[in-house]
Image 1 (cartoon, rainbow, N blue to C red):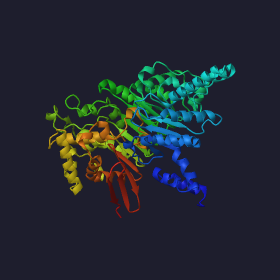
Image 2 (cartoon, rainbow, N blue to C red):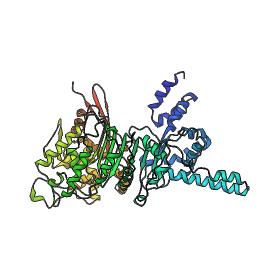
Image 3 (cartoon, rainbow, N blue to C red):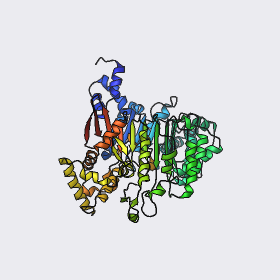
Image 4 (tube, one colour):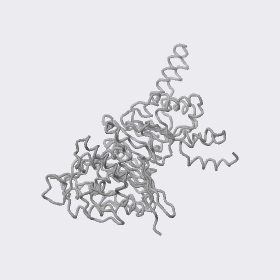
Amino acid sequence: MNLPDDILDTVVSDLDTKSLLSLSLSCKKLRAHAVPKLYRSLLLVDTRFNTVGESEFTILRTSKFRQFLEALKSNRSLIGLVQRFLIASHSNNVEGLEVLVGMFIAFKLKNTSVPLLGLKEFKILNETTPYKFLFMNKEYVASQNLKRSSTLLYENDEDEFNKYSNFGQASSVVSLQSYQLVNITDLNDVSEDAREICINTSNRYQNAGFIMTKKLSQTFDSLESLEILNSDAVNTLFSQLDDECVRFESLNRLSLNIKDLHIVPAVARCVDLAKLDRFELKFKQTSIGEESEEINLRMVNLFKGQLENLKQLSLVHLNSNNLLKNQSQTSQLVLSNSNLSYCIMEHLDIFSPSITYLNLSMNNFAYLPPISMSYQDRMTHFIVDQNFLETKVRQFNKILACNRLETLMIPDFFYNWKPFIAINREVKNQPQLNAVEYLYTGCNCRKCVETRQLLSRYSEKLSFGGKDLASTYNFLIGLLHTRLTKFETSSGLDILKYPVLDPIEVSHYGYLDIDISRVVQLILDNMLEDLSFFVQKLPKLRILSLGGIQISIQRTQNEIKMRAVQDRWSSVLRRST
C-alpha cells in the first residue's frame, strides 16, 4: 500500500465502524490509519439502541464493553487515542465503568504537561444516574490517595506521605474540553481549558452557587458552549452571573431550559446573543392565561433582532398538558399571546435563510383529540375555525422560510401540524379534520393492505375496537414519539447524533409483537406527497425527522432518494425535466 498518508486519512474519515474494523485487520499501514479513527469518538449503546444516522462516533455495544476494556488493558497506548467517550445506555450502571474512568484519569494525570492529550469529553447521556465524570474523577483520586497513604504510613515514610496527602487538590480534576456537571459549585473545579459545559442538576443543589475566582473568570471568558438542562439551575446560575457582572465573550452556543421567564433579561445581559450561531430555548408553560401575555411578549422583544447570526436553532415547548383541549380550551385561547408557543411563532423574527438546522416542537403532548369545526361538539371535540387553520398555515410557512435547511426536525408533526394543513405543491389552508384517514385510504399496495390488517389486530389486543381509527392513530404516533430522547434531559441540537430509543421497550408493549418498521412503511407510503413537497421546497435538505421517523435524503441530477434511517423503507422521486 503506497498511497500517501493524507489520502489514507481522507479515505478512513468517511468509513463506518464495520468498515474501519475490517480495514484495521488488513495490514499494518492501514491499521495505523484506521485505529485512531476507531477510538477517537466512542458511543456506548445498548444492543437494541444501536442505530444512528450520520454520526462521527464509533458505536460500541454494551455487550462488547468488557472486550473493549481488555483491549485497553493489554495495549495501554490505545487509551491515549480516545478523545470522546459518551454513554447512551439505558442501564444505570455499566459494569466496569469505574475501571475505564480510572484508566482515563491515570493517563491524564501522567501527562499533565500536555493537559488536552487523550480524553477531552466524557458524558453520560442517561439522566437517571447522578454519577458524572467529575464526580468519578474525584472519587478515583481520593481512593488512590487512600491506598498510597495507607502504604506509606505502614512504611513510616512521613515525607512521602505528606507529598501524596497534598496531591490532587488542584490537580485532581483532569483537564477536559467538555465537562458535565451535577451541581453549580462544580464550576470551580473545571479547568481553564474547558470550552463546553453542560449542567444537569437537581433541585437540592440550587442554594449553592459558584465562588468567583480569577481562574473561573478566565474559564467564563473562553467558554464557547453552555447547556443547562434544569430550569432551576438556569435561575440560580444566571442570577449569580448577573450579580457578578459576568459576560460570556466567546460563547457561540447556548441551550436553556426556562420555566420562569423573569430570568431572561439576566440571560440577555450575560450573553452576547448576536454572537450565537447555535441556540436552543426549551420552555415550560404550566397553564395558559391572560396574565401570561405581557411577560411572553416582553421575552420575545428581548430576543428580537439579537439572533440574526444563527445557523442552528432548537425551540421546544415542554408542556406536560394537552394544548388541544375541548371545553375549557378552544382554539381561540391557543391562538393568543398568552400561549408562549403561539407568541414565539407569531412574533419572534428568528426564522431566516441563514439557518441550516432546525428542531421545532411547539407541542410536546403527543395526542390528537377528536376535532370539529362545529361549536356544538365543544364538549367532546377540540373546536377549530378558519382562523385557526389559516394561522397554522402561516406559521408552517415560517418554517419553510428557512430555505437553506440541511436538517429539519418536527417532533410534533403528526398531531400538531399535519391534521390542520394540506400539503401538495404548496401548503394550503384547507381543513384536514380527517387526518387519520390517510393511513387507511391512501396507498393500496400489498404491503400497505397487509399492514392495515396488522393494525386491526393490534387494535383488538388494545381493546380499541376495529373502527376506532383515532385511538389506533394516537397509539402509533405516541409510540414513534417515544423514539426521541426526552428533551428535558437532552438538547435538540444534538439529538440526531445518538441512537433513537426503542419505543416497544420504553413503552412496555413487547407483548403486542409490533413491527415498527411495517408501521413506518405504511405511514410514509401514504404521505409521499408530503415528503415530495419537503424535499423540493427545501433543496439543501439532507435529514428530515418527522415525529420520530428519520429520513435521509440524497440528490442526484435525475432523482432524489429518500431512506428511513431506522426502518425498512425507501423511495425514489424522479426529477422533472
